[in-house]
Length: 121
Length: 108
Image (tube, rainbow over all chains, first blue to last red; front, side):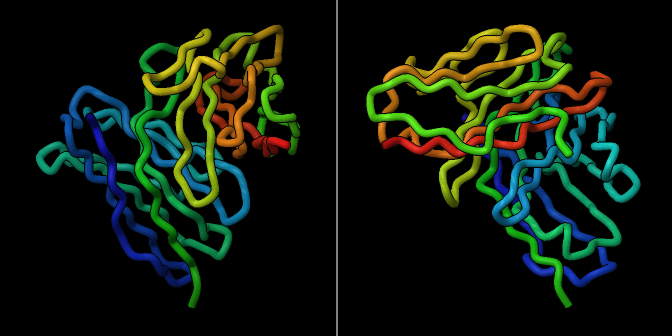
């Protein structure tokens, strides 16, 4: 079965760029949608965006100016870059497969275990 | 603020039934999916589509929609069902995805 694993720095300085990678194992990254979701400590879930293996993307409007999601099919990985971070970007970042092929239906499954990123000097 | 609103907390006696609701205008057009999250763990999908359960999810979990409200019902709640639950669907534009505010379920 497909498994996802996030990786990247756990500490990022304010104003710098947060970078995370999600490695997909047990299946091909091709022909599917892949998403990033985050959760600040003690708070709810926030959808960040998703990418299709062709490179087409869809971002949360509230983060769109700072977010880039990319895919590397040769490595079976997709990545998140979030620029100009502040303490408000401190969160557990999850990667997940997004099932959005049908407009009426959408869900996320499976999920990675999550990666805590702290923004602090 | 989220376009999908959930009650912050509900409680249920062991073995009884609890309904968790998610309200939003987009739910008149799009299905909600539901996730269970236990402390320190990633969310787990429990319901998607009209009323579909992924493999391994007990049949005491069910979903429904009426008007602008989607519901997740746990029939015969167990101690292990104590968790945070989140709904997810599209926003009012239909172009983006959004999560509900979350509901903490306590099993008494």
